[in-house]
Image (cartoon, rainbow, N blue to C red):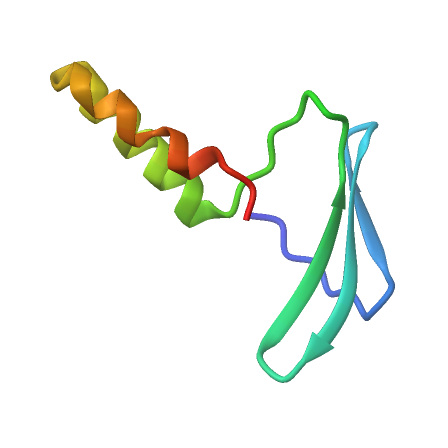
Length: 75
């Protein structure tokens, strides 16, 4: 794992077309902005894990696919 220190309003670049910017830092919380092409999916890790779990469940139980839709809705 690469670990980088960044201050507010500083950024890192991943590959040729993904930029991650530190938007704000307040106490224990850091807000980041991610600028990536539309074809690059960006998820919070807990949502990504839920999607993977739902995909695995759908292989075992095809009716479980119905439950996947709520994970992809914008909030």
